[in-house]
Image (cartoon, rainbow, N blue to C red; front, top):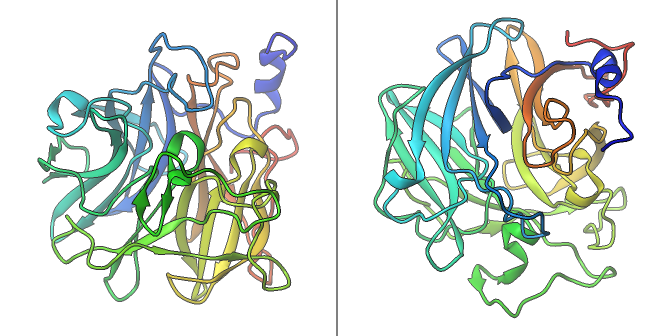
Length: 339
């Protein structure tokens, strides 16, 4: 990253880090009771060398960030949950999400068990900022990473999840793990994200995990070699004008893309890019509405001067055209601004 002048880059960035005293990433933003709550990863220097499995992302805990509005001060509400307080988890508290129901708040998070396999757990609190108390076991039937929980208009909750490479989704077929499984060949159908409806108690799946399809302009499944469009990780769902917008990261090509469907299960037709590549290897986001405007929460590694596993969350407004397409953001474009 020596070739990047970060002082100059920050001058043309469309947004600055919301929090600077700690490193934060993978922001899952929600509006609860009129206030913005962000559930990010908490990046630390774990002293582990970079590899494609993401072992250098050695996060141990979660902090919840709150804001009165997107232009307001971001407040770190302190420790919300630590891996030592999760009976089943051993390490790598990766990208979380949260939901609320009947006055309770639910934090969903992936972590590795002692056997090195990711599962997804849930922790519960009476407060949006925690502290959260983890359930003693992970959610039965869960696997991989990046849970994203969406509440539909009828009050049904759905979890989207999955990620390849370090996220281990390539090691599953029909929801069963086998370490011998590999990624598909380039001309084969890409691995797709997963979905399961949540039970009424928000602590388990109400159905067998299903796969959702992302289709190209001809209605065909995206191929594994189409790495500028195919799903890699970082699921998110939001609804706009009655349509379901499924967004995600392409991973090794570093785009945030989206696809649109008519119901929570899809299929979803690929539409385009929401965010062009940021500084740092990963890209991970969320989208939420606040006072009739829409915002993209994302991260980059500019504060750490390009260290991939030390990231900082940011926010920028997104806009739709007359046809419901999201206008692509360039994260370093002086003509744009945070709002």
